Amino acid sequence: MKKLVFAICAVIMLAGCASKNKIIAEQSLPDIYDEAYTEFNKEHYDAAAAKFITAETQYPTSPWAADALIMAAYSYYMDDDFAGALMTTDRFMRFHPGHADVPYVLYLRGMCHYRQVSDVRREPGESAYALAQFQQLVERFPSSEYAKNAKNKIIILKNYIAGKVMYAARNDMAVQNWPSAITRFQSIVSDAQETVMTAEAMYRLTECYTAIGLPEQASGYADMLRKNFPDNVWTKKLK
Image (spheres, rainbow, N blue to C red):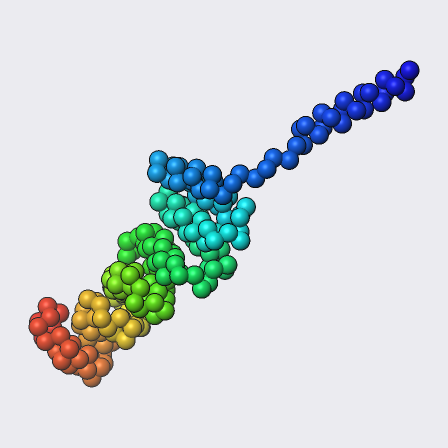
């Protein structure tokens, strides 16, 4: 009798465990997508990103997998979760390097960094990262619909980066650290010629070389300033 009771109890326990560990069928891809877009349209971007990621991880071989990653990255971007967006685009580039939407992904990556650029007194590094992404986009996909906007961003970023160098160089001048100031100003003249900082950099170089008693070098930069920027405000400051 005891053996019978024990057997019955064992069957009941096994049945209970089986019900708790019951395998639930995966949600269909269309259903996941519907929920993801519903969350996105409600501006619940974090929830939408999670759903799009679920779609990609559960159906990685689906034709929609790449689109799911793009939408997840964009959802993170809209939620100001730039780290999440960048990690998702990294995954996209690893698994879909030849996809037609690579230009957009490069643009999105650039914008993630671009939106984190701060004022010229700080150096978070985001400006250089953004510039690299936009330059890659323009070089690889010059006919892309995103290339024109990327070119505009490149101009802005180059001026921004030159502005940071100029800010540091002026501080060098203020403490009479002439070698450092000269190096910084020369980097603007050689590497950022298309920026608005170039004329001032040439003018400042004439000041620096005059200060350390090298009039020939000062005169050379003054002549360069007159030749390249004859009507510039910094040219008019020359004595």
